[in-house]
Image 1 (cartoon, one colour):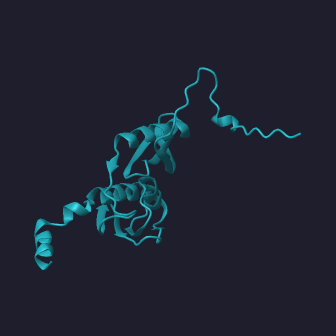
Image 2 (cartoon, rainbow, N blue to C red; image 1 turned 90 degrees about the vertical axis):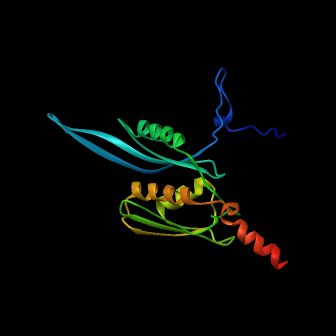
Image 3 (cartoon, one colour; image 1 turned 180 degrees about the horizontal axis):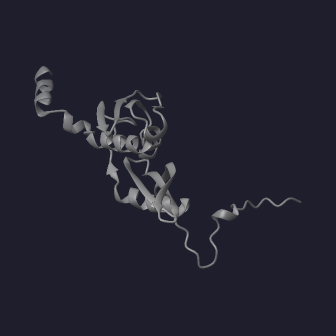
Length: 180
């Protein structure tokens, strides 16, 4: 006789007295670098992490932090990203209009795409758009390929987006009513 009781994996069961925290944000590590500081005795190495945090509902943020080891750097960067979150204007799974941004040597162009197109973006831009919850966008990154500046440029572009109700003016609405 077989036992038909299904059990949860051991990782999902809380231990006695332990609180289970449900993650409300998707955290993506975009880049990890080893950086050095030169001192009298030689070099002191630390790690720098670039992290994107989002809720897949239009909130996204990026953070960069240094730590003695990789896990410390990623944890600090997650906290910075959560503090610097922005609300992104979305329209039917894409962005409401074309937007262009320039930060440092990076120039980025984001364009809305029809349903089913997917994210046509590379590397850092793709990860940031995914954690924001945007599913259909065309993008072109020109200039530098520096991951940190590309991340800041993507956030700057998303911050420039205006919701559809703001760019439909009252004059345009009056013309529409007049035609009918």
